[in-house]
Image 1 (cartoon, one colour):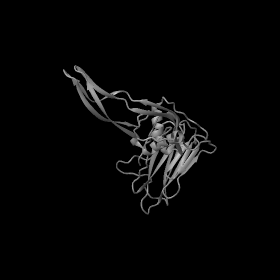
Image 2 (spheres, helix red, strand yellow):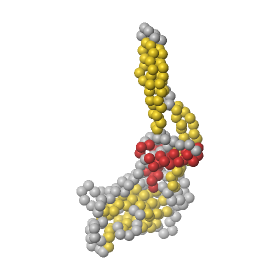
Image 3 (cartoon, helix red, strand yellow):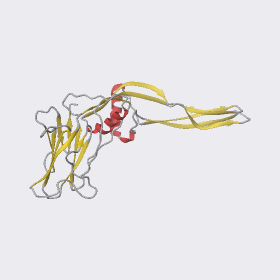
Image 4 (cartoon, one colour):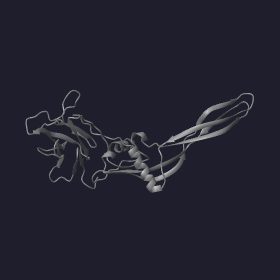
Length: 290
């Protein structure tokens, strides 16, 4: 069994551009992988773990072996935004493996639970919430989402760079809807920088033709590279096209030749300030009804 931990905040937030990292469940040829996401605002703990087979008698249920993580254990915490990855054995021609993992609030009375996940290698995955609970519990294929009640809205402030990065890079793939809504577009220039080699004129005037190229890439406000996810960049470009009717590319290259004349006893150089378009807006992630 392999376990991956991530932690983040759910969101509607201000950002210039963002990327997401894809999370792919990994499983060996003889096992099945499952992901359980806590997308609610409460910290949960594992209050029960039960593994069985149908027909009974075969072992193991959870993937075991050198380098493998242990099965989920009672008392283990699943914080808001974290997900738990679980591997069940799937031997060819063997019995069905069944795992029931119960999650409860950190402070819970006897027998109280939030939801339980029923993972089965030959049947559909099941997620059952506590009777009477208004929380949402969704099972789709090998993935379970546990969410707050319908209608909840969370907002990450534009100054919360870490929260923005985590929400976009770790949650966008899990969202039913992830979109960029541009609000402000402004034209700016980069800071001036020297291009080429400065020309020194000692005792006589000097001249040269300076040719150079400059490239400007698409960047964002919280340091995630465009190359991290082309698919997420498509969301950004789509939002720009719908709002302003024009396109965005990942990078632009500019070239130019400049005549540089320097009088005697002077040093001359050329500086470059590249044009930049800055788009500021909101990314919205819709997870169930949250």
